[in-house]
Amino acid sequence: MIIEFHRNMLADHRRNEMFYEALKQVIKPGKTTIADVGAGTGLLSFMAIKLGAKACHLYEYTEALKLAQKLARANNIRGCHFINQHSTAVAKPQKVDVVVSETLGNYALEENLIETMNDAKRMLNPGGILIPGKVMQYAAPVTHSQFYDELAVWDNVGFELDFQQARQLTFNNLYVRTFKADGLYAGENAIQCWDTIDLYRDENSVRKRKISWQIKSTTTIYGFALWWNCELVPGVELGNSPFDLPTHWEQLYLPLPAPLLLNNGDRLQLKLVSDTRYEVGVNLRWETEHFNAQGQLLTDYTQDMSKGHI
Image (cartoon, rainbow, N blue to C red; front, top):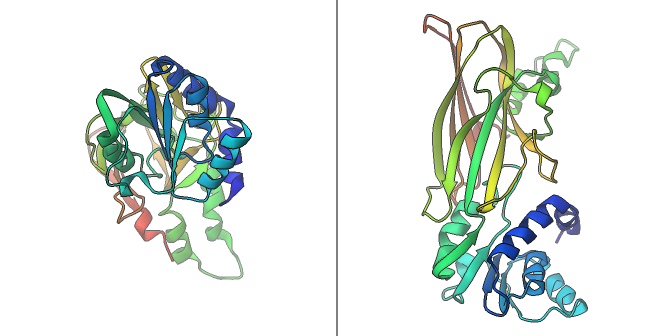
């Protein structure tokens, strides 16, 4: 177990406070039962017990669960039941009133949130509550060259050497980066929601969507930034938007293989395909098309994480 991973999460006070507020809104002291899926070191369950939850069932398949048990004893937290298995492997889980799962990553779906919550709904009593209940994913074009320049070092290795094959691998990957608002396209409808996930439904692990931008002034695009916003319960939201308060999560950078110069009247189109099936892991494909004002296709790029491995 890498304790640093858990330390970073627990050091994120905004994350902790928003989950605390969500639990506070749904827990009826002495009555509510909780399933904490991907419980880690147990913080969410400990919060729930302190808020009056009747019982918490902690599902965690890693060694972190042993630490959670020690922490529960050290803090005199009672009413916790520890299950050292992945929740999907438990044949007959205890029925509960609330399922809470903080299985979010820099890319919202990288820790199998959809697959975990699709399965976890079988734990709910009638009228039960999921935390989170909804996830929205967003994209915006990147207009600052910094991150592109970092990746394009293969162009200038020197010594009369050609490293273009290595460059191709680099530009078929996504990268965790922190964006500032002034590094993103600021035109009309600059921020596009490309995916809405209702976790109360059985959602598909393969997500597809096309979005586009109508360019009003000359600008150069170096890729796309992705982020998410999560409705924990109605009125309580948490996300990693570059326009919001920072969390331990960052944004993602999807690079273009070369900068795109767009003029007034041009249209930029992005198709995103996300695949988080268990047998796949995480794969993202992004297809970029640049049309001029007359509708003529000028540039067409397809990039795919599966092509970014050595």
